[in-house]
Length: 190
Image (cartoon, rainbow, N blue to C red; front, side, top):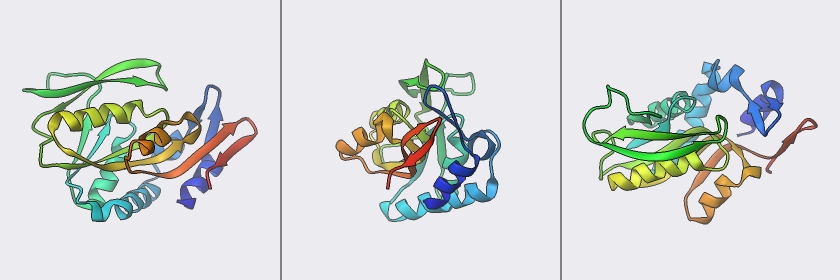
C-alpha cells in the first residue's frame, strides 16, 4: 500500500531504539479517513479467505482491526493484556513480550469469543519480532480455531518477525514493510 509508505514518510518519526512514532495518524490520534482505507485494503486482501472473526491485542491494534472487521462484516475480538473482573468464566491465556514496553503481558480472551469453528484473521498496527502475533496464534490454537492469516499496518522487516511467520507457512500481509530506518530515513521493502 503505497499510501501507507507515503503517510509514514510524511508524518512518521524515527526514534532511538528502533521505534517508529506514528501516533499522529495511526495509534493515538487516528486519521479516520486513512483508517477506512486501511480497513478496505486489509479486507480486500482477505475477503476470499472465509474469515469469521478478526482478532487483535489491546490497545493500538483495536482501531485497525475494527476497520478491517467492519469491511469484512465479521465480529472483532481483542485480547486483553490482563484478566479483569469483566472477563468472566473460562479464558484462553498466553504470555506475550512487548518490544515497545519491554515487559511481559498475560493476554486473555474469553472462551465465549473464540470458537473451534472460527476462521480468524489477526490484525495489528505493528509487526516487529512477532511476539504479540505468536501469543494470538496460541490463543487461536487453544480454541481449536483456524488461522486465516495475519495483516499488519506496518512491518519492521529488519526485526524478522514477519519473515519467520512466513517461513512457517503463515500468510502475512503488511501494508508497508520497513527494511531499515535510522536518523537518515526509512527504506521500504520493494
